[in-house]
Amino acid sequence: MTTEINPEAKSAAAKAGGNGKRRKALAILAAIIVVVAIAWLLYWLLYARWHEDTNDAYVQGNVVTVTPQVGGTVVGIAVDDGMKVEAGQVLVRFDHTDTDVAYQQAVANLANTVRQVRGLYKAVDAGQADIAARRVALEQARADVARRSGLVASGAVSAEELAHAKAQLAAAEAALSASQETTARNRALVDNSTLAANPQVQAAAAQLRQAYLASQRAQIVAPVSGYIAKRNVQLGQRIAPGTPLMAIVPLDEVWVDANFKETQLKKLRLDQPVELTSELYGDDVVYHGKLQSLGMGTGSAFSLLPAQNASGNWIKIVQRVPVRIALDKKDLQEHPLRLGLSMDVDVNLRDKGDGLLPTTTDNGKGLATDAYAQQLSKADALIDGVIRDNLGGGSR
Image 1 (tube, rainbow, N blue to C red):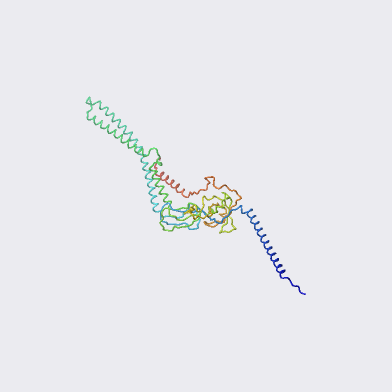
Image 2 (cartoon, rainbow, N blue to C red):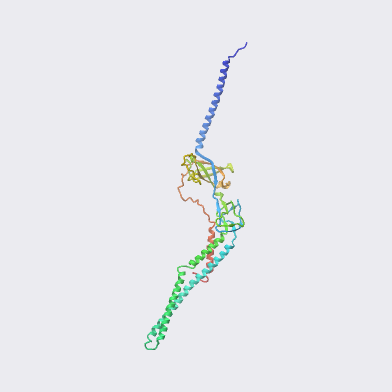
């Protein structure tokens, strides 16, 4: 006995089964969406709202260009690209023949000037003695004229002899005046100064100092410690003052410029902690740093051709502001970076930081070098030696 199934019943049963599967799929999808929404909400509440990140960040640093202060022909190059150098180390040597000749001439000129000024001091002393002698002669001539004037009337002394005595008196007065003028002129050249402080000696000393510095500057030294980059100088090249020869990069002083969108700057503050990773070392190496400064303008504001937004075709574009991040010195020593490398930056906003702008003007982070100070001190010591060697038996 066979039972026939109603086709309409079969269709209803199939439709009910399809609706059940659809409802189940939609329920699963809704559950997934709820879970994802909860997970995203938890991620935002616990992590995302306390962090700002960007991968538009690059390593920057000081690129110290080495340029000569004097011209010359290159006869020696002591370094090459990638080499480490210390401040004061000789990098390039010029032919020093001309500078040595000029230096020797300046030494001789200073020695001769010292001896001439010594002669002026002696001339003043001799002039004083000459003035004293001529005053005695003048007094004697006056006495002779006075004595003969009283004897002319009695005929004991002739008028001619009296005239001769008056002529001698006039000559004595003129000689005293000339001696006084000569002594005053010599005294004006040395008065109120010691020999070393005499203007003539100082001028000669300045010439020697300049010649000595020119001789020393024929050896170009490193102004800072770092690593050589962009060496352009070659042997035999004739170099003019100010020509770039190479660059020195202090890799222990690099920083990161991170370009944040203007919409990300709301909670950024100075001294907030930052974690960074580089493409060079990957995520295994994490650098630590702090926000050092927030840019004073967007990148477009300081571009060569700033944007002109006054036209009718204006389109709003989210701008980026460069933010400087100081890196931990220990991290840099363990994993050195190179200029221009890409970095991923993550700023921790839980730290409230220290405001938007610096409140002090002197933070002790200025750049300076004393690599050239020693040259001037040696020049002064040399000048003192030349003056001392030419003082003779006495000194002033």
